[in-house]
Image (cartoon, rainbow, N blue to C red; front, side):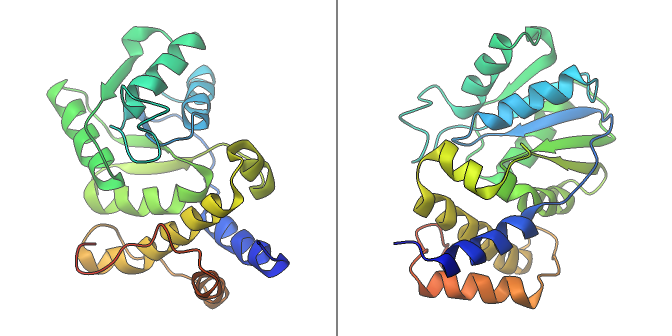
Length: 219
């Protein structure tokens, strides 16, 4: 059972992950693959607003997407964008990435092969992974400016869309843990994490929201 304290702690982690960047025109948007088709929807909305001329959808499959997106997350994102009216010639697909670091590095390599000059990237992720995605991008592609974006919604609305509160809180905890441990592994830049966010994270771990935690040494 999820207690009121659990919800309060989850809200702290949710709020911390938001970067509060104002969308602005960038060289390209990179939509990070996941179970959440809202990433594709938000990328399409940004394209319609003239925020970028080109989209890269990146992602293979994972344990949470192999049934829903058997052809790969990026391919299903592309299908969604085409359904919403985005021209096929402005969408590139990177089908191999299996984590956020690979999302960045493989998308960067794809764009380089196409000879596309990238100075700025609209990095579109799930709402609770904005900061993690941003910190990863800054580490692995330091020559470009990253602008974070995600679907604007409250945590309870997001939980309603996923229909699994425990899973969402597990993912929040996993994302925060990576912000704590990955900088030392060279996977992302360090972020200042306020003490109240650390406290919320520790309480949720103690309450068993641990299915998305990574374990040393294979971080």
